[in-house]
Length: 326
Ligand code: COA
Ligand code: MG
Image (cartoon, rainbow, N blue to C red; front, top):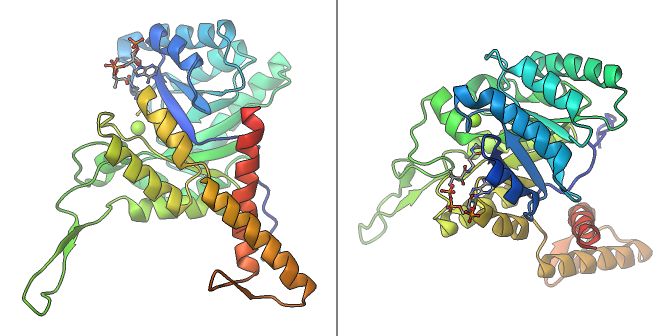
């Protein structure tokens, strides 16, 4: 391990984060009863410019009047390139003791997060808030991805970074059909086999950006989140994309429709067979330690101390999920 100690952000379950346009009180009410770990009330791109002030008031009323249970509640404010951000932050943070997170979209440089921290710190002091507000940010521009490691270290309030492939494609010029979907043109054609046949494999155009965000988050104790999958009628596509994200190390993902919550919660939870195997790994390694060995064989495969670390991480998440269910 490096001598640099990693300080993890405030721990929370973050398998699913439901996007809810704050201009829509009916959806907000429905969201308060949903099974998502986190709900964010959106003041940004799902709200038309003429609806911004009303959406802000809806978000404040919803945070104060509805019963959100144990859910984490976030408000996505408008980006720093608009004239809405300061009012979004001041009005919502001042008026809502229940607020857990402020969600800043289109973050480009570390100073964007620093500026938000200045504002939120002053509001907390003025209102003597007892619950400290955390931050999550969207990495969804070429500038944001280029500076992602610096952004990850920009504030002690930062808990999570979420990849947004739609805006990222708009920023980089990547061609995509649906947000979170693939592009049939992005693939490889194999060399001909012995009979001259060639196979075509579609690849994931978001992989490089996602892997970089996962590494930056995990390096600095943050939760990496995958972004939305806009084709909410394509459950198979959503699940495949979520499984890919979970395999890469994402903690959870944004969902845009209630129908995606259950799958996201299941896919970003350790499966029962994974939990059982992790427990066997921990037991086998405890025995190995007693026998004075660092590596042993389990089910015909080598396991060593790295497997304990993977198993312990998985078991910690399984325990947090079990605790939340009670
Ligand atoms: N949050 C809460 N409730 C939602 C919801 C959401 N994100 N999306 C849909 N619902 C509700 C609907 O109101 C409807 O409720 P009802 O059965 O009580 O009438 C039910 O779920 C079924 O919705 P459906 O008819 O299938 O979809 P829709 O046409 O009402 O909405 C969208 C489709 C895409 C407009 C909607 O899902 C949405 O606004 N999603 C979030 C968009 C967003 O925030 N984008 C920004 C982040 S990328
Ligand atoms: Mg966006």
